[in-house]
Length: 363
Image (cartoon, rainbow, N blue to C red; front, side, top):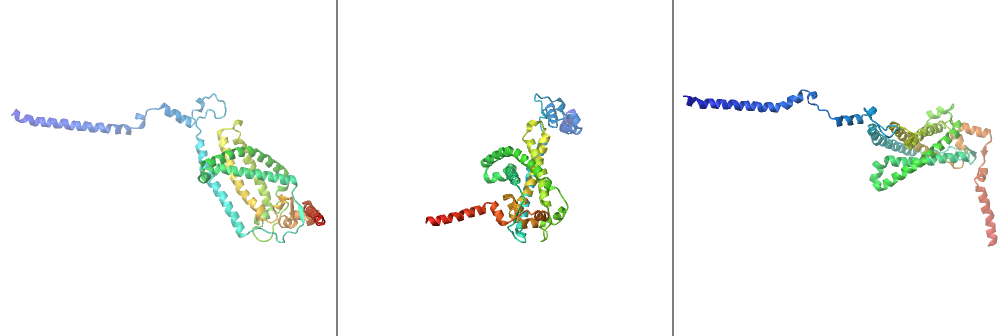
């Protein structure tokens, strides 16, 4: 009988062992999951290297970092703000700077198509009045030429990578960028000097006065047909003057800060200077495009003031009536013949007339 039941008990025993082993195997598989679910504190292992670089990156251990170099930010090993500065330059400044420049070019083109060249109602009279001295004209052209040069070189440095490289290639843009950088740094201080000279020379004639607000409300004559009143400088010219002075000083000071890192300014000051320099330059270049158009092809008789120093009295009466009235009262008008003598045209004509009889006698 025992021989009959032993195999049955053996099978039961073996089955129990098998189930026990399966249960043990499942528990082994679930053990890591239960351990991780119990919380990070039970399995966290401190990594000294990881903690060190986190502290260095966020500058939380600045008091414990020492350096043999004794200067501003010498203990800052990783500048986290540089990523924000790079994002601003590559994303915001390039994108919206290009939009502003293109927008102004489109506006100028539309004004030219719709309004055309602003001509004098009565035409040029030929009678002239003196407006700017030689020193003032030289100062104006000095500032203008430096501004154009710095604007072109600055735009090459700003838009070279996204715009010029696909067109000209890396090698050409590399040469242009290098030359632009050196020229920009070299002539930048001269722009600051000419700006200061411009400030002291023209500040008295650019103080706002009664009647300037009317010029603004009429859009400088672009709205309506009748002319708007103005003194020696109208409100538009005064506003442009103060924009050049104030924004130009911001550009100059920030630019000098960028090219003089040895003065002891921190990285934050350098980054903020670059932001001010770029944004102010884009604003000034954009408005300067409108100024250059209106002062040359946009308005009849305007460019003559910076070419010869004289303007036609008809131009003065339509654009600067209050100043033209003073010129009439002070008897400052110059006839066309006298103006031609001042320019040397009559002298040359007389010389050519005197040479022709001699040539006929020799024949």
